[in-house]
Length: 260
Image (cartoon, rainbow, N blue to C red; front, side):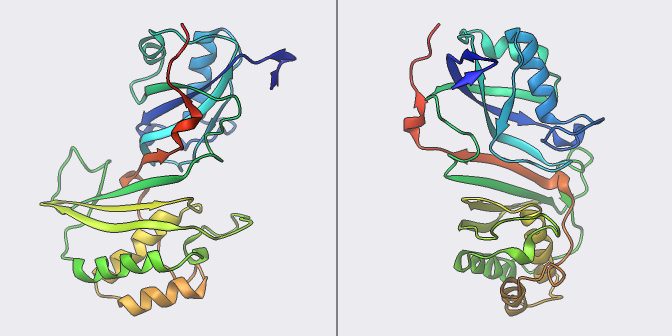
């Protein structure tokens, strides 16, 4: 493994949280601010070498994260004070929560076993939540929404919920959790899968809300999945209610004792 014609000594993984309203998504783009760019700039400044990071997933503009993962290579050994130093450089909208020494060929994207997202809804107008969750003032049929959610576990082709022109090689995903949880005025949709298509979670939630409003039935929801037609699914919900909360990896990829 080489970088700039030098043998790379170390590969590290970092767990990251960020407020997506401050950024135009995860992935680096020209003439705009992204999470990846800000992290790379901060790491490069701290480690005094050009750092490139690879994330577990590419969150869209406005989407938040409490458990995003990324890896990077460095010729440095990270010290015990790394978290304090990097968080001192980063803006308040991004935090590095944990750092892990990994095996040399660890890959944050391809080695992930699963990703988990939560979509947050509030039924009470709250100025402290309006950019963190979707406000819905009307009643919903949660029983039907829950029944429709469970149908997601029976399918593996989710082309109907994929953003058009995404150029996916496959639309296959294995969903192993899909459920609604209610906490008084706060409602959450939890979904976990081995991978997600672009726009998939927001399209699923938007279609499930149509089930909740009783504009479509549970059987209609099943038919939409089977159709593979994005035009039959409903509109994406707003990005600010979506959070990437967890990415799972085999523990053997992480080295327990960091060198100082």
